[in-house]
Length: 254
Image: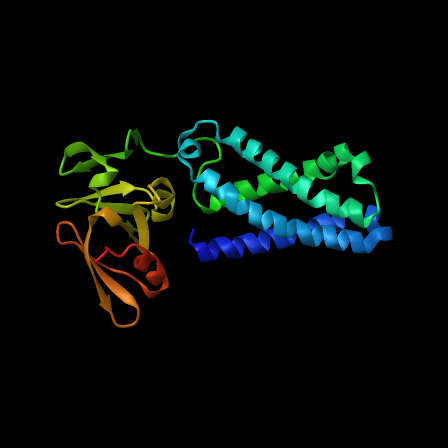
């Protein structure tokens, strides 16, 4: 998922979540409508910001490799819910002119189960959009320093380490793993594989291509804000304008 798509998804989700929470609390909060409005305006803002911390956790090596993802989703949702309650509930009680010193347990308990449920729904949707399983890790095989793929070329089978890959190209429901001398086809989608690769080394430069920044030999600027990347082995890939900023961040130092 690109940053733009993630931000759009995040905004839409949390606006809808705030609306649902407001409607759910309406029967109880109709006499304090201004409090309900403020509470359910702050809630989407807090959820939007916390979700960036959650995806950092989801992209971590431990989460990617664990076989207990479902429990970790619940744990992450619970922690996020508690943080939300601690940030949101004091604002609500102050607006109701209540003494915070005599309601400490309510600060943690009020609405927390709802928050857990909403964060868990967010996590499940995010996992689906990024092609990740919510039950277990999807890394093909873990090596000490990266991923290992089982590949085949003209009947010869071998294990391919990710650091040998120059670039990855989309090919329908398959992807091409391009090394210095060979190209291997595996059953996978580019978006799913992107989530599994080392985010520091593998960078998207085109909607259908990811490059290994360690394999870039030179970059040539082209008209219109695009770049031509020359990789190890003489492979050439053209970036797209929409990924210009990402290419510029990985340009080789002079």
